[in-house]
Image: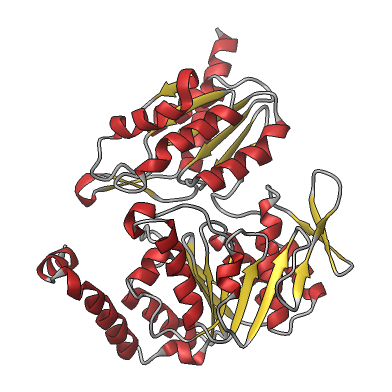
Length: 423
């Protein structure tokens, strides 16, 4: 509340200086801790959290003590706490305090998700990044930045401030904008045999349902869902190679990852499947649906209705994707903030058409999907992943976990079945 009041008092022309000064004060307060770490920043629209976790695992496999800050958790060495701030890239004082704690704990490396909004507010300033990683880019935060080009420019401007190593996804249509930025070393990664840097980390996927791919003759197998995770793994492998870590160490580290919280997480396996995923952008949602569609004859989606107050353009787009790939579409509440949840749902429903079933209460929506599921159905619940709360108006939050709601609904269904059998 105090920060909101202060920002209201500051003229718009000085807002940038306000954020810049906060970043400087935070760095001074914690004695510029990032200078004592090797800091890696991961930016892009999707895949940041998974890439950070994968890179951390590779570095740890190589024997280093690692800290990372992602939208999922804060991790310093063996200590982990859930990121309940509902911010992918927290404020300047939180980040600098995190770095100081990492230094005090003896960490060698620190990884951080870098968001466009964080860049816009100078949260990345006075951090001594050695490496910048670009995962991918698709329309997001368009209204906040005033257009896709401005959104992309925010990401590119981060790369301009990192003078060391640039790691770029060559398969993304926007790769050229990042490759144009000077750096001491550039590494590109690709699943499509593209070029543009030297060296290039190239992967070829093997046949079969498993996420198995080959890099320079080494076979990698990921214990994850979704082919898009190969691209995330290549980003992490590229980081490992840039730090002198061999492919075999990278392979062993990646194969130890058995899943990501709230990212294509399989919560129920039998007699039907239930997945929970964080996807809330059109590109991410499309990839989730494409990964799951071949696994079932009846795909049921519980579609989070897009957070309130931002990117209203994508609501019917999300709905149209659900209508295209899913056999049944339940639209429900997500994080309405100060907007009317029903109005948001109605906007999503315009893209769904006749398939749309609207259930405002998210718990009832999930319960309905599970109660009516048939054997071999597949239910996918998107929009929140492992987020620990739902954000309402006036800053109110209520505790939440899609996965726990799924488990409770499944338990209730089984109890009901047993009662019916006894009757």
